[in-house]
Each structure stands twice: as structure tokens, then as C-alpha cells.
Length: 153
Image (cartoon, rainbow, N blue to C red):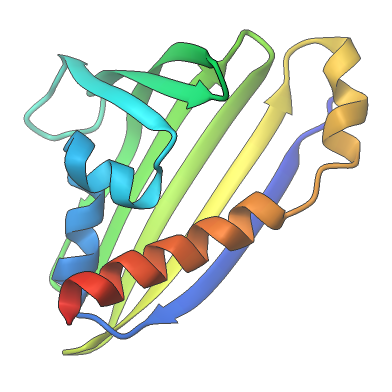
């Protein structure tokens, strides 16, 4: 049996959608405002349409740093909706997708929806995933809200 864990959280942000979107512009400086454990983010291959672009990302947890390749799977950039979906394999243990959706509610209010899936690649990590909570997802949407609203002030 294949176990796939999904989480999704959404939050309203008191900031214009374009300002929130800048946090997802692939620059390390903006990325660290919402993902402080990411310590490196360099393009390996970029495409004009963005989908298919690959970045080498370094993530630090305590004294250990992991590197992995993050591929852009979906990209939408319209006046009232933005979407960035990425996929990567972490530590050869999990196949992860993350999606960041922004919906313009009005000139100064944005709905942010964060979705992630986590698929174990080794049998022995399945039990950890079965008991995983949504704590990191909740903390992430709060961090995006705080960062975007602080930038907007």
C-alpha cells in the first residue's frame, strides 16, 4: 500500500497579491523570509516559461545541511491568481510537492493557500509519515502572512 500524506492550509493576508508573490520570486533573500532553513538556492536550469526550471537548494537542520534539486512543476502568473508548484526528493526518503496559490481578494487582501504532499520512498519511513501532524504547514502559512504584512507596512 502506497501512503501519501497531504496537507492544505489557507489564510487571508492583509497585503496586495503582487507583494506577497515577491516572497516566491526564487531569490534566496526573499525565500529566507518565509523559509529560514533554506541556506542556498541556485538555478541549475531555467526555462522561459518557468515550468521545468530546476534549482539546487540547500536546507540546514541543526548542524546538518541537505542539498536537493527542486523542479518547477506548475507556474501561473495572472492579474488575480498566482501559482507556483515545486517537486523534490528529500534525503532519498521522501518525494515532496509544494504548491503556493495566491488569489486576489481586493487591492490589499490576498488569500494564500499552501498545499503539500509527502510520499515515502522507503518502507521504514512510512510509520513516521502516518503520525505526522500539520504543525509545520500551519507555522509556514503564519510565517508567510507575517512576512508579507511586515513588507507591506
